[in-house]
Amino acid sequence: MGAHSSVATGRRRASLSWQKRLLRMWPAFAVAAVTIVAIVLAVFVLPGGDAKPRTLKVEGRLGAAPVAEFPIPYPEGKQKVRTTIRGSGQVVKPGQPVLLNLTVFSGETGEILSPDSRPQLIQASATTDDLTREMAPLVIGRTEGSRVVVSRPAKRSGKDTMEIAVLDILPTAIIGEKLDPPGAPAKIAIENSLPQLVSRVDKSPDSPYLGVLVKGEGNQISSTDKVVVQYGVWNWSDKKQTAYTWQNGPQLVDIAKTFPGVRELVADQTLGSRLLLVIPADQASGTDTLIVVMDLLAQPDQARARQKEARK
Image (cartoon, rainbow, N blue to C red; front, top):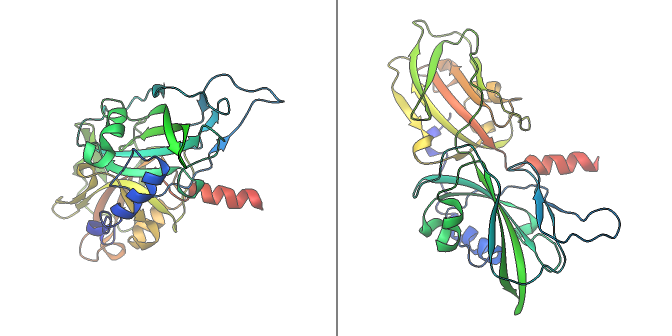
């Protein structure tokens, strides 16, 4: 992976500055473990003509741009929580790593209140220390792949108002139909819901190998992108595991700074995929062929690319 043991360097150092930003976004939610900003197009829309929506409605694919319809100003009231998408992933337990996408709308104007008017991709642990006692109950006990919509009273510039938050609980491990890639030099099995190396052929391949274990339906990534991933790495010679992020949570990886073999194979793959990579020593660490399993979870810059493309 190219310094794969240090891909999370600086994560905690970034915590305090991001905490302050999120405090401005939603004062009750001081998320301490934020490391990644998800630049996603979030759109506030009204029905056609001059009709005004009477209720709160949120649409859009999980992890993508939420589209919210609600009356402006939003009626004042107590906090209300609803689950609009029920995921099929694992149940979030206290203390486990989570990956969240949070968008906050003003109930007074409909504008996005998140820093830089962008939804935030949040990496944290499911604890009150990381998520605070206000946010933690919205996440713990729900399944990955769920969307939670919260309307709550707030105070902005000394004025009582309402805010609407869309909280997507993103998968921390790829779920999907398992494929059987042809000619795979290594076999990966799912043990306790996580990928593990089971066996390999006797002779290591002379060239890089790519096998798609689960095919994602997200955006295509490039060799210069930064991607939120989970991965495991094993030496070919002794099958020793040298890295495994599922224990500590997703990592932000700059594909351009990974081993040449990884860059070559990951380029043009789609988000939501689980990949099997076998990288010869001369395209990896130089000492041993590597077996890599990688989940492509999210891409912080995906919406910026779409924005640039739309302006052309």
